[in-house]
Image (cartoon, rainbow, N blue to C red; front, side, top):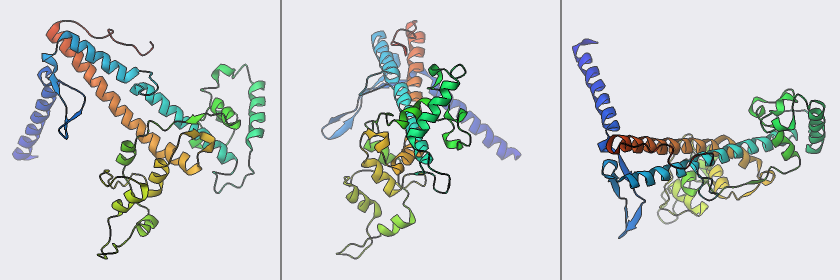
Length: 309
C-alpha cells in the first residue's frame, strides 16, 4: 500500500474511533423536546441528559417505553404498529392468493378457477380429516401450502386462518390511517415511460415544458410546497395516486392493483421505517440508562411500562 496509504488508513481508523467515542460519551447525549412553532419558525428544545434530574430521566424513559409498546389505537407504539402492518401484509397476500385461484390474478395460468365457496368446503374438509395433526389452535400459523400442492412461493406462507376468513369475505377492514401523506410522498416517484409522455405538457403562455412534479401535484390535489423527489425504487405516478385515493375498506373491496402496491411496496417500506424508529427509541433508552447509572447510581430498567402489560 505504501507509506502514504498506511498513513491514510491509520487516519481513517483514528477518525472512526473518535466518532465512536463521541457517540458513547454521555456528555453528548441530549433529549429533544416536541417541535413547536414560534413566530413562524419551528423550534425544538434540547436538554443534555447529564443535566437532567432523576425524575426527568424516569419520565423520558417511560415515554420511550410508551413509544415502543403502547397499545393505544390512535397512536400505537412502534412494536404494536409493526404487528399491525405485518397483519395487513398477511391479509393483502391472502386476498391476492384467493384472486389468483379465481383467475383474477394469475395472468398466464390456464387452470380453471377455484371459487371461494368450493375452496372453503374442500379446505375445511381436509382440516377436519387431519384435526389431530392440525388442530384449530394451529390455524393462525399453519400455512395453506400444507393442503395445496403447487402453491406459488409468494403465497406459501398464507395461513389457513386467513384463507378461511377470506373465503367468506371476513378478513376485515384495511385501516389506512397510519399511512400518512408525508410517508407516501417520501417514497418518491419514478414515472413510467407512458407517464413521462402523459405529463409532458407545455405552458400555454410561454410554450416551455412544465415541471412534471408540478403537474403531478396539481392532478393529485397536493400543495405545491409538498416535497416529492424522484426515486428509481419509488412509486409510479399511478401507484401514488392509488395510494392517496385509498380509503379504509374491506380487503375484498380493494382493487388488485391496490393490494399489490400495498403488499410489495408501501407496507414493506413502512416496516423498514418503523424498524428505524424502533432503533432510535431503543438507542435513547440505552443512553438514559447509561446516564442514570453513571451520574445518579440507579437503574431505570424495569421501572416503566412493559410490553405484556
